[in-house]
Amino acid sequence: MKHKLITFGRIIRSGTTNFIRNLSLGAAAIAIMTVTLTIILFSIVTNATFNNSIAQITTKINISVYLNDTVTTQQVNTLMAQLGHLPAVKSVNYISKDQALAEYKAENVGNSQLLEAIGETNNPLPASVQINPISLNNIKSIKNFLDKPQNLQLQDPQAGTSYSGDRKQAIDQISHATNIIREAGIVAVIIFALISVLIIFNTLRMAIFNRRDEIGIERLLGANTWFIRGPFVVESILYGAISGLASVLIIDLLFVGSASALQASSLGLLDIGYANHFFRIHFWLLLTLQLTIGILIGAASSIIATRRYLKFKSPK
Image 1 (cartoon, helix red, strand yellow):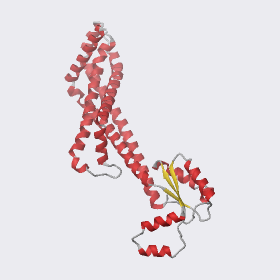
Image 2: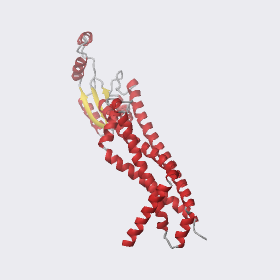
Image 3: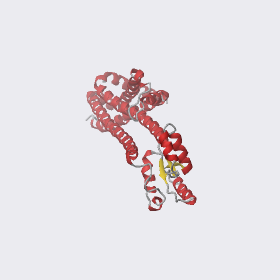
Image 4: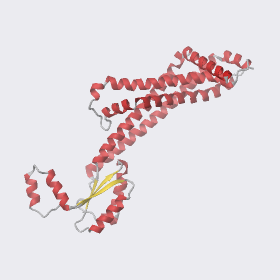
């Protein structure tokens, strides 16, 4: 046990020494890994912010199905029960003609002409079923259910549903934009992660080439495989750890440097104020996550690289 600890300590010291010695060579690897981890961290914060914004938007969006005056109570109850069982539906409410009229009057309390006009008629407003979706992405499935022939018969042909026209276009654009941004973030992370691995491969290949004589002597002296590979793994882990710290520092400086502009600002769905808040309350968790991802990328890359390149360096 003591021998293993001594060997492990030597591997750590040797890896740290190699890291310092090859710092200029590993600068590119650290830079690319920092970019990769910064994109990952930014994607996490952005995704959390989008989810918060979408949750707020979703609570304000509903689909109103306007009913024919001839629809019976039993038909309404059947429709509401079927809607309530749809996976995409959060809740269903019935708005009677009298409730619709009361709400209309409350919304137009300052417009005497509209109130007088509707007061002269026999309540032209239809009853409706108000549907609150769980997610914006599932609204189309609700619309498909409502477009079934048996359900269309219950609807007022002149009113239809509120999920149409400009309202439908706006909701669809929000849903589409969030999906595109998430997919773009995933693609960017994958691309930069692959670039990081390739650069670490080249960095280790150069380091192995520079130490080929030393590695040959170690093999002649009977050093096992992990004693030779270990320092390179430690070196790459240090690349990943420093990159993880740097990525968190970059995002932190971004928020600190723009603190005055972030108080109540937002860019479309990206509520920057909430993003800053999310980053602060999850700082240590995000730091741990970044360090873990950086270390895993570095360790995995170095293990694969040393298996590939060191096997050709055995002395003749």
